[in-house]
Image (tube, rainbow, N blue to C red; front, side):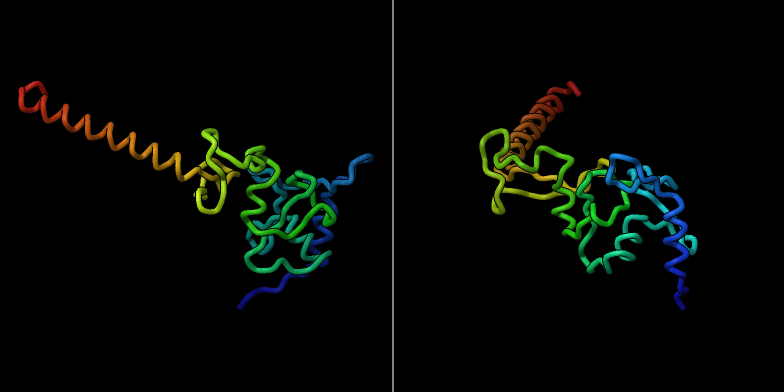
Length: 163
């Protein structure tokens, strides 16, 4: 059975930790901040991102499959006017990177649906990257040639008892 928590009490806890700076429209959360810069609050022993709680309280539920994008680019900002609901791809291809506005790879191939491969990155805070499929195929061919040459050299060295 799932426990129910008093949303009003949780919001009051969060409000007590918000800093409203003069000249800034952001509501800066000054409680626990995660390694990625998001405000965190514990509810029933679980860590939950504060901006999601605030958005759901003031605006409404976040639809399944969608996420929150900070329009102000301040991760610990909890002002619901600075948030919008977007897909994960839209959020991750967003403001951090000037690469999102590039339409072609460094070798001139277009970044379109047919020629772009999306992949997960291993760098914290950056979960999605893109790669030109044409350039990837070229790199694969070069790597395969290199392995074939190395295999031939090892075979020759083994037949001459060098290895």
